Length: 288
Image 1: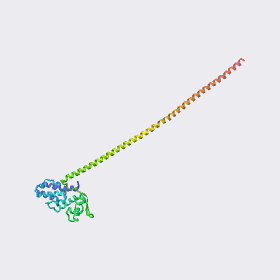
Image 2: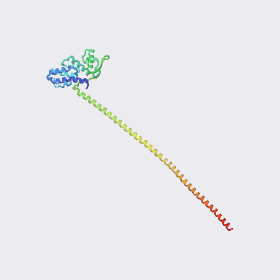
Image 3: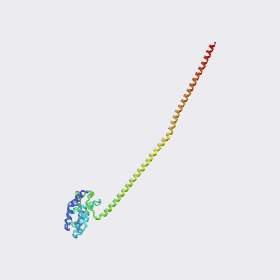
Image 4: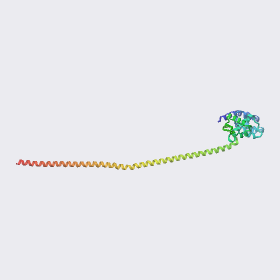
């Protein structure tokens, strides 16, 4: 809760407690005057809801204006007070406070914050009186504002939430809140749709990347498969060459072995021939 609002509620609390003992219309009317004149009391809706104060509205006609006055302090303006007949006169403190509260209501639009408009709306006699009112409202913590004397305007940057809501404005407020809620729901739906679209596109992009990666891997695998038969033939050829060399060496060995056998056989044959001639010569020598 805003500190100024909390301070105002605390200031009103004592008058709410006193309302339980203000059983007569006169006592309730006096309580209204005291509450609207006291310093730091800027909210009045709870006091309006108390039993004895609310009874002023349906009680003797002479006390009804006091109830109307409290309603003006709760959610009305100086213009409402000025246009209401048979309203009780205001003390200086009441008039000053009602003008301060009216300034809060007028701060909702820059067009109503010109010196010319404020002088008329608040029934102030001079610019000096207007500036004094604005300065006192700032020091009370009701608004944050600056006086733009060059442009003859009051520049308000923030307003304390001290004005009560008129019961007749509640349906309008509900309609405004419903419209705002519908806009929020629509914005949220649009955001959810955009998020869903982004996720779907991201998923499609990921699937496409996976397909591309799979296609690349397939092409690499096919390329390797095409290279394998060539490598196999070369190895087979090399292997065949090795076997051919081994077979040639084996055949050459067999040929050498046969040549060796032939050479040995020839030596024996020549020896036998040489040996046979020796026996014949020996026989001849013995016979002779």
